[in-house]
Length: 245
Length: 210
Image (cartoon, rainbow over all chains, first blue to last red; front, top):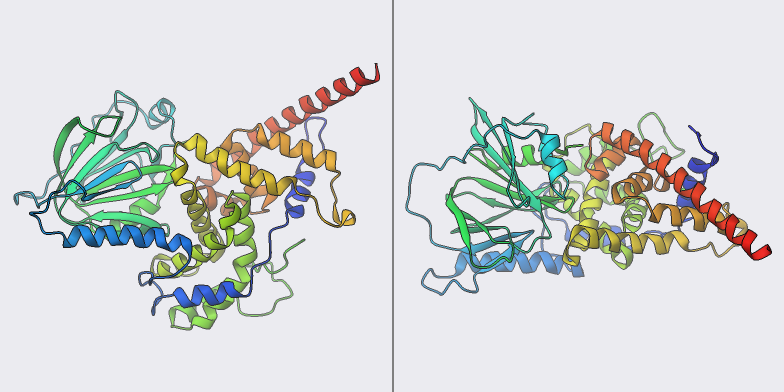
């Protein structure tokens, strides 16, 4: 493999790695893990104690507050952020037929879209190549869609999770889910979704109703999958996402 | 420090205990001690992964959280699939989440690397244990610092953590082909950077001598 002067590079890198002194696991680790396990594997996590758990609890508490707040209360404080998404509590929109996500017209290729934005674009292997791919004019959002006989239209939007807020969702109900073991949000009911200006505040455009939606994060990117699928299917699609190289 | 507690299929170690699949079957049957065994078995590599991906002082918390989350989502773990890459993927996600508050991607990656760099530059207490000269060690770390984040990450997984290709793909969330091609490019780039670095060091020494 050596093509240059530095023959022993791979050996030296391995030695560098071996020399790293990471403290051995303390005897308390397994105990601490066991104390936090729920009764059955695969069940949701039970409340725990270390610092990092508090963050998740805080999010959980906000969600509970959202669900519990009477609709007459001012909505000003009733929001939280999740990787560039701002979720506000709102009343359920008037019942309509299940909204279908807008399709994306064929235009850019995956590689072209990936080259145009500053984050890593992913595509779910479960769905294969999308029928359409587009990059928003401000290059903040990459969108793609698939139209199939079995599942109708599925749409995936993705953007840098560290943006202040890109997408506003006003929803009556939000659920906590997990993708690859990390937190995700699941919107079961039709809800309003809109794009926000880069400063995250006032201007709302492209507001529309959205159906089942899963929002998760992978490698610093927020992904938003929308379509007429169950949560388990949405998670399976989410977990099959791989970057476009 | 070499860890010998990894049991991979086809590579049995001296540990003749049950393999991961047996333990996972027992965990699914409600045997919590079997999960404790999995924690013991995989904690060392989980800690190393979190530390070298930049978990810093939160390394143990990240690993604890990852084991709890892995258990909580065992219903989506495909029976028969290897446990280690799946666990390490969760560890990597948890480590990334640590820096979520740091703002933009570049800032987060910079923070992760700063924490990993500190570990890589530490010297063993016992000089007899060091297999690398201090100069070589420092040159390698300087070289790694000059790689792009994806190149640095793939070298970290394959060489510093000694993960195999499938495990690296899981940790990085990339397809295996991407791991392979980026690793190839990363090593070539690192060789170039190190050659240039060596040239600069020599020139500096020559200037001093002259």
